[in-house]
Image (cartoon, rainbow, N blue to C red; front, side):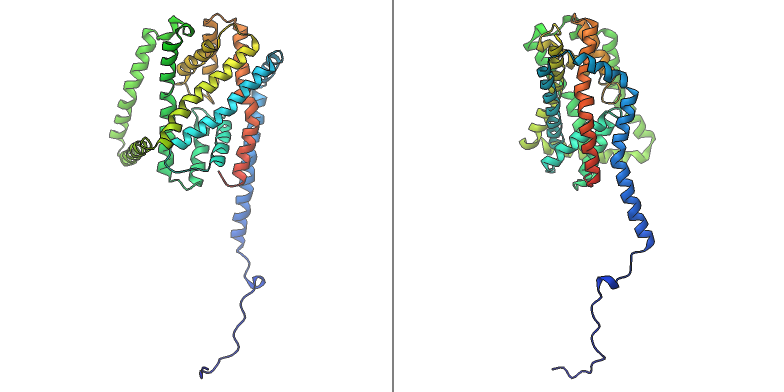
Length: 341
């Protein structure tokens, strides 16, 4: 028993009711953050409505054309569209060493597909993916390098597909469209040579960019080398990258078959691959515009009537843009509301 005198009875523990209320500034910040998050979750739906109002003629014409199409082939095209989300998720996982939750990754790519149709050059999809990776604890340098690797692999994966069609299905390839003309070839070669030269000039003149650029390249090379030593990463990376354009081409083939286009499936698939490759360098929201024009011209070059070729492209856009856009926006809003993005 202690002989030390007691100063008095021990003070009771503070209760929750006795704690001082949070400062008014903190409460206002919390309220403003919650309000901003609600506004951001509704913003995609607002943009969807604005875009639908602007491009209402395409929606109306596409619906009128598809009303006479075979519904089962259209359903097959919609299935191929949904499988495209799975292929995109495989490429995203293969482009980063960190293991990502499969369900949330797939949901993020559904949301990224909707955002991709609102901003040019895949900026919307990449922004959604970077935000998702950051929320999953991935460092910003690794997240950005995974975006670069994703874009590079998606661009390179079309080349072997085109070569396979040229070698395995030569009857599906029009001889006049296999090789570009001299002027187009010179422009392509010039662009390939000027791009690294321009980057070198910028890095030479702007010194503050040297260290971030070198760190980015170093991280990208390290991650790419590491990923290609793991079959669980490079197989979904390259497999998904080659499956994605094939699935989009199958959507075109399904729509063309439903409308009675007088072309075989290999011809329809190759027409999309060639048109998307030729128009892929033009930045547009979701590729809308350049790819549409190139695909119409390619189908017409095969001998398809212009009206039927136009209806095929409209049906392709309805299945790949308009029908998935509403669920994509809803998923995007839900992910923002749940702080996954």
